[in-house]
Image 1 (spheres, rainbow, N blue to C red):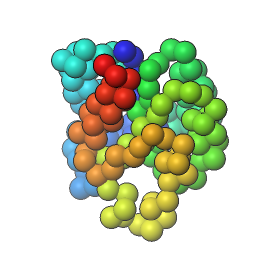
Image 2: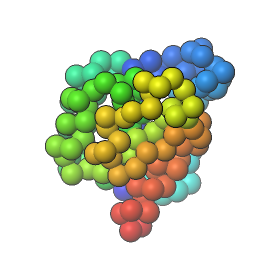
Image 3: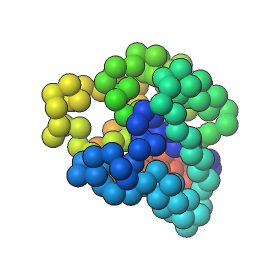
Image 4: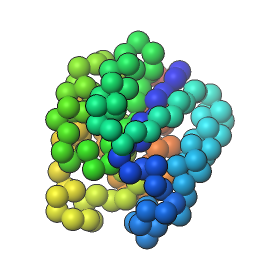
Length: 144
């Protein structure tokens, strides 16, 4: 099984961006943790990050027929991007929305996700572990 982890806008700044909210781990630290986890869990994982909405849309579209699932942290695009929502609903690859922080304990505008209704689930507030939980959900969903 092969999963795609997409990190969106500003997640390239992990480790230096608001460490009190997102922790001190970097994007590389997250990817290294998930590489080890995937090897131990017997599935493949590919990582991709962009700050550009259209590139995220294209990456989601390209997952059709290539990946068994997507873990998506769209960052702020979660609350604003109809285009990302439409890309997820246009393909048959299951997607889990992930957030490092608990978006429901933050500013009110972060409480609404445009993409959650087209995902199989949402995991929020568990730090980097949320990505592992999302991978586990996708893996178990495939009946492995």
